[in-house]
Amino acid sequence: MMKYRSIGIIGAGVIGKSLFDYVSGLEGVKVAYVLVSDKAKYAQNADLADVLIDDAAQALERKADLVLEAATPALLSALGPDILAHSDLCGFSCSALADSAVESALHEAASKSGHRLFVPHGAVLGLDGLRDGREQIEQVVITTTKSGASLGQAADASGILFEGSTRDACIRFPRNVNVHAAVAFAGIGFDRTRSIVIADPNTKAMRHHIAVSGRGLEWEISISSQSLGGVTGSYTPASAIGSLKRILGDELFANA
Image (tube, rainbow, N blue to C red; front, side):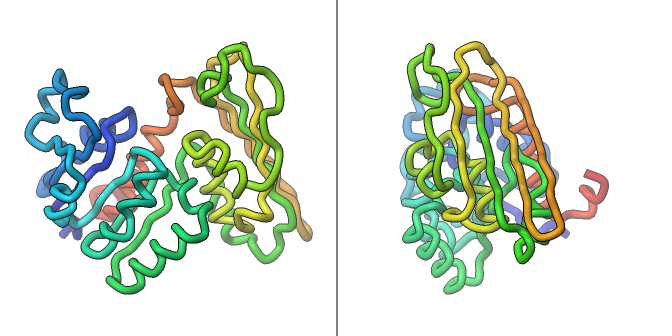
């Protein structure tokens, strides 16, 4: 029997809507709410009409079994501790965890209530290897290349925009480096993981390259997906649904 009978969703962008569509098709599970900042923006989405809420307190009062945050790091930071008091939480805006105060608050809330905080892998692969190899890994460098517009910069921006710790990258580009945050969280941490962010005015793709080295090991992973507009790549919605399937853990998904 599935553990989660009601699921709340924060955000109705590309990822949030994909999660809503998937959850809506699950037998025995209801969408408790979809929290957005402006209901009028989604007036044309009739399938969302019955569950849209633009008041966070009202949404949290419904105490969904599981909440999927797919909005912004700021919302995950602000609402996460209150959500964890009553619900399990999956935060797709995991760059919020680069703020040590936010990470501590979420950890404390989860420990106090016994609820779980899930950090999804997002548009990246190989986090199991990073986690397993923590004791041997000495260096992790992740390089992201996107168009300037996707990075919140001028469309003609070109070259290296940032090079430094992943903690600082998350502060500089909070909505663009969730992949970096996931890599750091799974691996050797936000301060030891190095981030490089590059603007390429001639690309429509979002590219991530991860280089890992350590005692007796070395590997590289490269991922590229087309932009769906804004900060989301074409692989990310499928990745989000895959993460949700693993959280649900039902036998129906044994081959997912």
